[in-house]
Length: 98
Image (cartoon, rainbow, N blue to C red; front, top):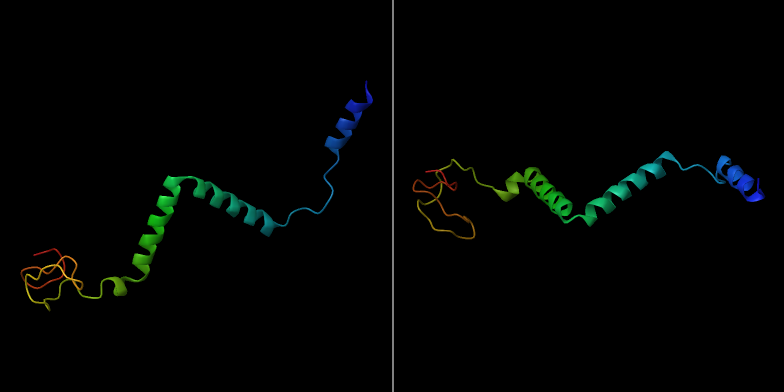
């Protein structure tokens, strides 16, 4: 046997020097790997943005749609405007139902 083959076997059996990674460091590495994988895929980025958009809609419903859709408090048959993007119905509701 040659001396180089004995040295290679000894190196594989010896554990690496230094301290072992902590659990928090391992988790941070996994999240970093996930973020890198998501950021490389256009479809995954679009999916994350859609998920974020719907989460914001669910978290702030009163600021996005402040009026009760069944209330008859607006003039009937208004056209689209900055307050009512789709206008009002024939009975004065802000929804698309008549």
